[in-house]
Every structure is written in C-alpha cells, then in structure tokens.
Amino acid sequence: MNVLLVLATILFLLMVLIGGKKGARSFFALLLNFGVLFFTILFMTDPNADPIILTMIGSTLISCITLFFINKINLKTKAAFLSTFITIVILILFIVIVADISMIQGFGKEEIEEISMFSMYLGVDFVKIGASMIIMSTIGAITDVAISVASPMREIFFHNPSISRKALFRSGLSIGKDILGTNTNTLFFAFFGGYLGLFLWLKELSYSFGEIVNSKVFSVEVITILCAGIGIALIIPITSWITAYFLVRKREHNESI
Image 1 (cartoon, rainbow, N blue to C red):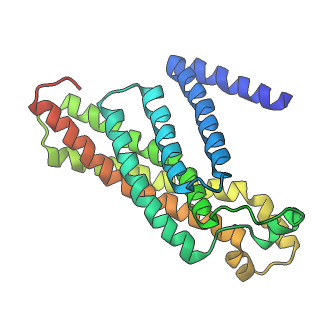
Image 2 (cartoon, rainbow, N blue to C red; image 1 turned 90 degrees about the vertical axis):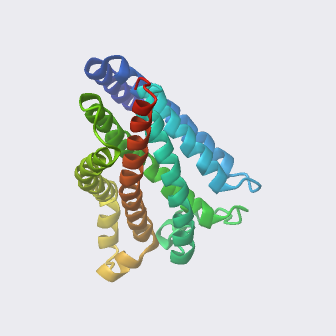
C-alpha cells in the first residue's frame, strides 16, 4: 500500500509540474474514471442489470470526464465526445456478435483451477460481460484518438478559416493516419508487456504454439486488441467528418470556436 501511495504521489507531482492545472485535472480525472469503472463492475454483479446498458452509461461518463473535465467544454471536445459515442455504439454491436461467435465468455481452463472452489452459477450473461470488458478496454484509446484528431483540426481551421469542409476533412484523415499506426502498436505492446508472465507460465506448462494461440486467455486479449484497433480506425473518419462539419457550420453562422 505504501508503494502505491508513493507512486501515486510521484505521478501527481510530475503531472502538476509538467501539465500545470491541466495536469492536476488529468490526475483527478484518472481517479474519477477508476470510480466509474468500479461502480460499473459492481452494478454488473446484479443479475437483473444489463451489462451492455451499464457499459454504455459507464463509457459515456468516462468520455465526459476525459474530454470535458480535462479539456473543458468547447467545440473540439464536443466533436470528440459525439464521435466517441457513435463509435462505441457501432463497436459494441459488433463486439457482442464477435464475443458470441468466438465463445470467449467465461474463464479459461488455466483460470478455473484457482476459482474451482467457488460457484460458477452467478446468474449473469457472460457473453455480454465479455463484450463489456472489451469495450471498457478500448474506451481510453478511442477517446484519446478522438481528441488527438479534433484538436489539430481546430488549429488548422483557426489559422486557415477559409478552408473548405472537404479539405478540412482530408486534413483530419491525414492526421489520423499518423495516429493510427502508433496507437495500434501501443495496444499491441501493452498486451505483450502485461501478459509476458502468462507466456512464460504457458511455456513451463509445455504448451505448443497451437495450444497457446487457441487458449481462451490468449484469444480474449488478441480479440480485445483487434477490436480496439477497429475502434481506432473507425473513429478517425468519424471524428474528421464531425469536426469539419462543426467548424464550417460555426464559420457560416459567424460564431466563435
């Protein structure tokens, strides 16, 4: 516990020193997002609750905190929020189908040994729980890409207010192309970094390459990475179009941005 407090304090001080007030807001946003995740998971234990609806509510709150609390309410955060919400709706419908077809719900046999003493009859839909888990794993990357596209598009428009909507949209896509590669690589290496111990354990159990690839614990993470990558790829054109539309509409109505 002392180590956690020391690391949290160091992180807070660095974020304040480097980011100032926005850095402090980012730290408290991290705590608020943790609280949203905790209560979302807590409510999912209720058999009468729908995990998908809870995930949509939780994702919306996380998006609001990440975008509006840190960056305040302005045109770029509104565009990023709307883009995030649309992408999450599309993605969650897709992920529910993928989770059902791939049968990744529940626990793998490697995990069952540790919890075999407990009852598995929890009264919850593990397909929806699996889909919710993937969405919650991708929401951070999706909001990050949304604001990373919307913010420079606003700067482009500010320095070139006569730019056409089509040209602004293309600028957003160009920005997104650079972000796409780096974010997908970040997700990929985060997975392998977090599961390095698992790979070593599977090696000690003499798992073949085929057994590792087909194991549920491995498949869940790979599907999560792929779905997150799909979400990142989707939100780039969505954010580019919505931001370009908002900015040009503001210019036509002679409103400040």
